[in-house]
Length: 179
Ligand SMILES: Nc1ncnc2c1ncn2[C@@H]1O[C@H](COP(=O)(O)OP(=O)(O)OP(=O)(O)O)[C@@H](O)[C@H]1O
Ligand SMILES: [Mg+2]
Image 1 (cartoon, protein in one colour):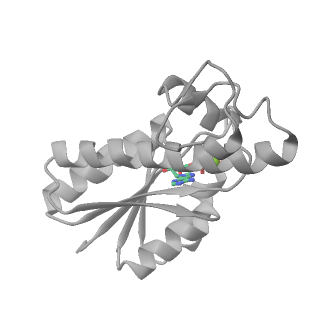
Image 2 (spheres, rainbow, N blue to C red):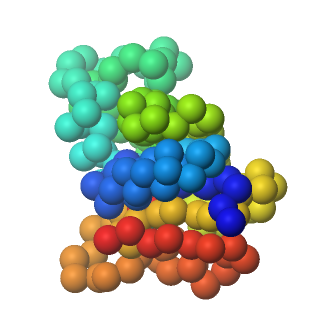
């Protein structure tokens, strides 16, 4: 019997399908749903940058000083391009992590509520994604993890990404991998 479901998403299309699947399961089982996104603290990947751009989290415009960066407001498209490497590492990384993470889970929560899940929570975590997903499932008592087979990773032709593979191999609970 499933008591509590954790779904992890990186904002990818497959991650969105994982949300749909988890919502369907949680709604039909009457189980609480915890939605998480893990910020990786790495330089923004091409996939993350594309997400930020297509979701209009960034806009072309003049470059603001890094200190004025507000994660809740759109920043110029070339924000991280115009910064010195060190600043780009910290400024762009921190801003994108917060803005994208919050946006991803907010959409997923809306989707869960629309899908009839009454007990839905969300968290944006930091760290290594597979480890954070498993640790969080354990600490929150989730007995099912739902995630996508692939994510924002750029490699074509790969059936299962590294996060998905690690979670399947190491999680002590049921794992549902959505294609
Ligand atoms: N940072 C993350 N936060 C939350 N969930 C994640 C994160 N990264 C991946 N996932 C989950 O794992 C699924 C598979 O993503 P994964 O990262 O394994 O594939 P990939 O990005 O295609 O490959 P790779 O990252 O190895 O290049 C995603 O659909 C999502 O459900
Ligand atoms: Mg990935």
